[in-house]
Image (tube, rainbow, N blue to C red; front, side, top):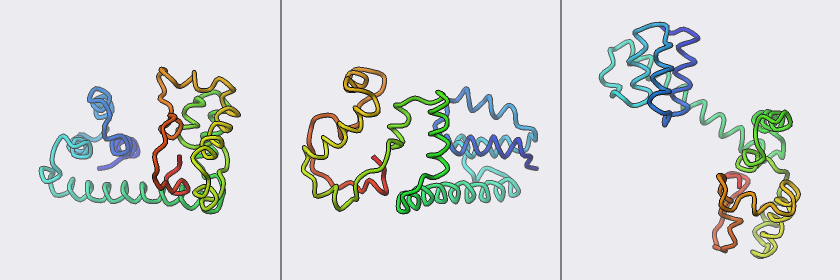
Length: 178
């Protein structure tokens, strides 16, 4: 039997497969229906899905399919929003949380929430110095003129594309972010 509580716990476990063991055990201890505990263990990989009984295996397969579909929908939403040059629900919510002071500038940078970029064709034609100038200007606008000190040697590493070494690679930032 699956309850809303159990479904939520299964969703958390599937979304964060590398969750610390203690935290996973804490969530599993809150499962309402005892027959769902092995299902939780299968979702986080403690037991093989083949070890589940037939009913639990069907639930596991349905849940796995739902989880993969959710991941695909989320990724497609992100890509579609970039193509349309629109903010998606995640960007809007993160911007709101940032304005409320609940998430940091570093988190916004990590998720690429720092404004529009030039067209891909224009960007790829820029020299490495011009690209670095764009990123430097964006970082200065977001974090101030001493932005490098904030990242160098701190708890939050500077993104590779701003680490003063130049590598030649093709990066589709519309699909992959920055």
